[in-house]
Length: 187
Image (cartoon, rainbow, N blue to C red; front, side, top):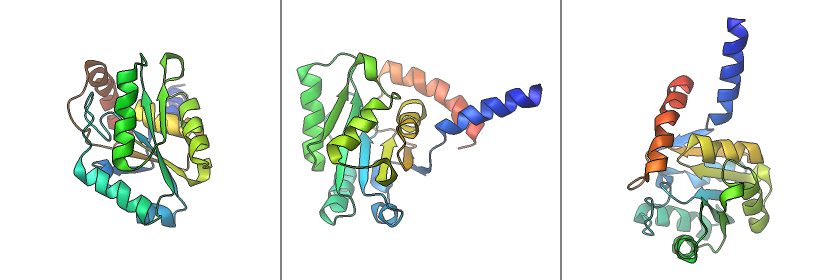
């Protein structure tokens, strides 16, 4: 019985295992991903592209993504973000960040369809006219970004190990529980 429980727990944990781990989004090798057939990217907003609540994207991340799109390594990118309360100010912030990295594609998820629900990832792929087998999901949280990408059927999930900027309280709580998953998966 103990072996069965262990097998079930570790089987479920595999849904949280990213396919690739990088320090920040600037460290992603888009050329290497293109060789794997990845042509589209779904990027988390808070703590992956910008610090929580900020709208200033790290220069290295902007350069990496713009270079990848200009050289056609990436055909399109879309920002996917959870918004418990959708306000015009928060939506403008997401659009401002999107324009900074060179895209207009933004999916803001309200309370009922937050990540890891696959709806947002599927909507992002629809907006980019992409299929799951050619899309990568990039994010800083295993329980929302990585799990959601896997549930939506994207080809590759990329975990940014080092979150950017100051983190909101509810994110710090999630990271506390995430440490147990990181330990169990030996990441």
